[in-house]
Image (tube, rainbow, N blue to C red; front, side, top):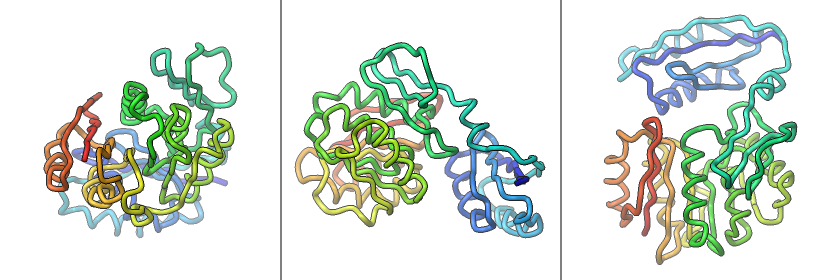
Length: 283
């Protein structure tokens, strides 16, 4: 099947704005998206593509805080996952964690190995926010042991799998709004021999139950974090609950801390890498 690749430039670029554009055009039939700053790349089967409809939807951003422009490219038929997988590189965090695909061989030995089937846009561990949360979990592994953990927006399930391997209380709960991510996370849990230690659920923050978790990992984006933080706080156990927030820029930290303080959370620590941020908050 031939595909159309639409390259949408955002000026200035912010990841949450790319997500807004993605949500606006998703119903046109696009079946995958990638982000390569300053572009949101959208892929759609050629016979389903309507450039007039795309232009109409993109015109809604003419008065937004950012501007959009786009180019269209015809991409001849190929095995998309095979192409993407061929460029997937393993992720090694110090001598502690390796995230790799099943076909990676002869890698340095680390204490924890996570084997995934890399799927386009589901999360591979390469993003700065994921690697920062991995580092934080490793640093706090003693405190994590035996804790009830939620991985919100689990993607391929990397963080849930690592939490399970680090000794979090079983089952770790993994939640995602994308059915494909849920299937991917379940398959990867089996692949890493921890399916009995992880429950994967399709849904958003509305599925959370009050007072259920000691730790919540939420690697999503600023707007969803701001919208759902109150629900996360309600889902924490009454004493000493901890939330790891990432998926936003360092410039967004004051806004998130203001919201956190209004909900009775205080900052424990923070990390940053390439303008991306991680906040560790406690109840």
